[in-house]
Each structure stands twice: as structure tokens, then as C-alpha cells.
Image (cartoon, rainbow over all chains, first blue to last red; front, side):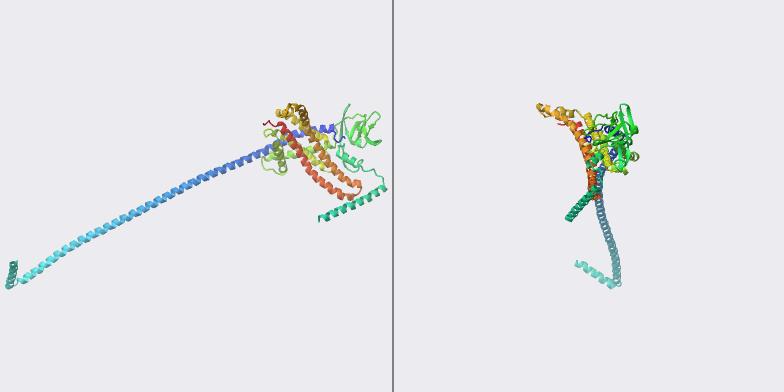
Length: 164
Length: 366
């Protein structure tokens, strides 16, 4: 029967020891342990939160970077397009100008050729005239070398005039 | 394969039985030893004592004699229990008791209870109980009290070294003993306290729950060691479980809020006519909860000790070592089971305490 009946002495010692143990552990063990563990838990949670935040930031940063890159690409394309156009224009312009120039050169060459030719012709004409004059003089001299011949010529000429 | 194994086992048991019978007959013939009383031996081991028996026969073996502290009308008397155990053994009818000598003069001990002897220097018995002798208050450092000191000291040393680790290293990943204890401490904090008690209030009760958990667990384990400093049936002693349950009850009553008392004296949704029945039931309910805590721990741990002792007793009942082949594996199996029970009962006690405290501090919600 006394197995199930509390014994006062043991009850007293249990109370004393357990209460002291509770007090000592609460002060020297549970408080520092739980504080350290919970602090660590909090700092881990904070670190995780920070990591999550950083990841979000990175994400938005990346998106921004992408946007900037895209814009840069578009700008580059624009610039390239412009440059191409400009160069084309320049080439076209240069082509046109050179053609014009060539035309001009050809034209001037043609002009000078023409004027040269005219001058040459004029000179030739003068030469021919001089030559024919000389020839005519020589012929006339030969015709007029004797009196009969002078007469014959005069007659001839006179007949020509008469006929007219 | 399994069948063959079964056959071997059965054969083994039968052969042992025949051996045992032979040995028994032989024993009867040779000498008339005192009959081995299993229940007396088990009760003796399960109950408290004023000595810590180590080895050898019950009388004259090696034991640690613990100090006796008794409060009489003349004041507090202190002496070693060896003055009782090594005193005179008086036989009176069926009962025998120790008559103290030296400083223990004037006291007698019957079944580990100390009584003052009467003017004739004797104890009087009636129906196997001491009758008429004054029983002084016994504050002796008994086997269980010694075990209580050792167990509590162990709990304190373990937890203090854990705390020292954190103090030294700050909030870092635990190492050594802290690494082993931290998950258990966190388990008690999160899964026992936080899970059962209001989120805002649970912190206050964590130290109590932690202390009660580790106190019960370590002392349960200590009780499983068959020799000093173990073997005392501390957590299977009703005085200890009574105190722990009473402490839980006090905490519940002190912290019970308006909502808790309201549910007892004015249970919501109960017709007025039923109140005379409901209120007494609710009041009894206050006490049945810690009572169940007390009985559960006491019965589980005591039962574990009794089973192991009974299994080992098989050898002594049959007076043949061969029975050890049966009783030792069975005792080993039960011991391993008791390892689980040691943790389980600590968990249950803390868990249910938390549950009851949680119910007492729960805010009304409709």
C-alpha cells in the first residue's frame, strides 16, 4: 500500500530540489540558451529575408539592365541605319557630282575640240586661200607672161562677161 | 527458415525447463534455503530505502549507508543508516525489524519506515503493520533522495555546459553537447510549448516545461542503470510524481484566466438546469488532469522496473543460470523498450502539462 502513498520526506526533498533546479536552470541555462538560439534564429531569418530582398533587387536591376541594353541596341541600330543612309547619300552625291564633273570635263573638252577644230579650219582656209592666191598668181603670171596669152585671157574673160 | 527458428526456440525453452526442474529437485534435497520471494524482492527494489545496496546478500553485502534525518519532539536527529541496518534484527511473529544501535538507539526500522521504540524498546504489530509506535517525521537522504540529487545535478551540469557554449561562442551553430541538446530544447519550446499555449503567453512557461521534461527524462534514464548511481525508482515514486503534478496544478490555477474559470463555473451553452451537475464535474476535472499525470508517470516507470526485475527473477525462481538464456534477452528487450518509455513519459508529462496550461490561458474566441 505504501507504494502508492506519498512519503513526506521524499516529497519535501523533491520540492526543494526541483524548485531550486527550476530556478537555477531558468537563470543560468534556459535564458542564455534560448536567447542565443532565438537570436540566431532571428538573424538567420533576417539574412534570408535580406537575401530574398537582394534577389528581388537583382531581378529588377537585371530587368532595368535589359531595358537599357535594349534601348542601347535600338539606338545603335538607329545610328547604324542613319550612318548607312548618310553614307549612301554621300556616295550618291559623290557619284552625281563626279558624273557632272566628268560631263563638264567632257563638255569642255568637246568645246575646246570644237574651237580648236574651228581654229584649225580657219587656219587651213587661210592657208588654202593663200595657196590658191599664190597658185592663181603663178597661173596669172604664167598666163600673162606673153602678150598673146594676155590677149587670149582678156578675150576669154571678155567672152565670159559677154555671155553673162 | 522462420519455422526452423521457432522450433529451435521451443526446444531451447523445453530443455531449460527440464534442467530447471532437475536443479530444483536437487536444491530441495541439499539444503532448506529461505524460499525466494519474488514479490518481496521486487517491492524492495521498487520502493525507497535508507541504504544504497550495491552487491552481495541483502544483509552483510556491500551497500552505501545513507544519512538518516528524523525530526522528533526533542529536535532533529541525524545518524548513518548503518546503525539501523547493522543493529539488532528482532523477529516478532511473521515480522522482523531492525533495532537501532549507537546513535540510532531508541529507533526501529520496519520495511524502511523508522519508528520510535516504546519504553520497552520494541515495536508493536497488528495485522502486519506497526501499531502504537510514534512515527517521527523522516527527512532522511534516502536512496531516492540521493538519486534525486544526482539526477538534478546531471541535468544542471548538462544544461549549464550548453549555456556556457552559447555564452562563449555567441549565436553560432552548436557543437558538442549543445549540438545534441539544442534540437531537444527547441522541440520542447516549439512543439510542446508554442504548439499548445497561446502564442503571446507561451514564453513564460517554457522554463518550467523544459525543466520538467529534462528532469523526468534524465531521472528515468538514471533509474534504468542497474547499479549506483542508477537503479533508484525515483520517477516511479508516487511522492515525486505527486509533486510534479501538483506543481502543474498550481501553475494552471495561478495562471487560469477569466475564460478558464468561466468555463468551469458558467460553461457556455449549457442549460441552467444542468449547472448543478456540470459545475461539480468541472471542478473534479481540474484535479483529474494532474492526477492522471501523476498516475501515468508513476505507473509507467514502476511497471518498467517491475517487469525487468520479474524477468531477471526467472533465474532465481528456477535456481538455474540456464534460464538466463530466456530471461536476459527478454529483460534486454524490455530495457530497450524502457529507453523509449523514458523519453516518451517525459514528453507526455511536458506535453500534457503544456496542453492543460494552454487551456487555462486560452483567450475566449467565439
